[in-house]
Image (tube, rainbow, N blue to C red; front, side, top):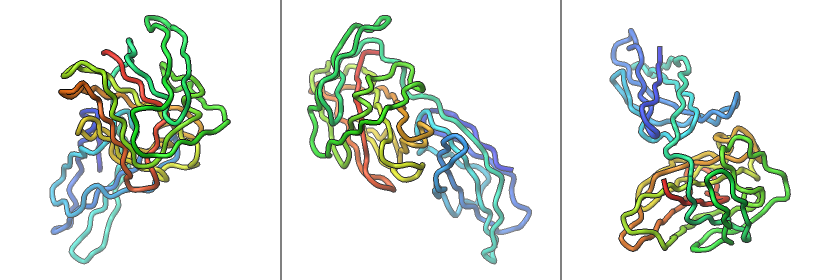
Length: 255
């Protein structure tokens, strides 16, 4: 019996009942779930001989299914049940936006709401690499508590790229909201990419479709970040296991 328990934004602890066959080892698989659909399983560990494993490559605010295969000395395998875990969000809702960038698009005004003053999503800037693109399709933003304007989700920049955003207080703590909407692929597992903020990996083989649950649906990943000694927040998007990275909007604010 396999069990999975989320213990942090990036870790899920797995435990299972030992096989009654001597000399077995285990292969552990993980899929990111999107409703009732799941991406192709990915091997996260092999040759495991114990009965516990800490998956520390999970992404925040993600829904996962795990299973394992026990391999006996003859090479025959037995699959386990699927264990489910959902990791919590890494950040919090932005209350005071310092800067917002419409990746791949033009400036977009956003009206004041609640404690948030009116501000403008700036036209794409502070960027090296990537290619802008857009869609005219409507984006479902109902899953996002404080969504960006439609125009932000309808444009994106894709490919290997780096945003180096200046103007912050050196050593200051900020919340980075990364806004996404998959407008090209129609199933999970087709776009998997990595994101690093100021040298710290925050997303590992991230799947926009799986997080949102469908195409043309907005989702947000939030992280705490510390501005470097020059007051810059640097966000690097790199290819993972499938296709290109993509970003629709970057919103940085005070916690």
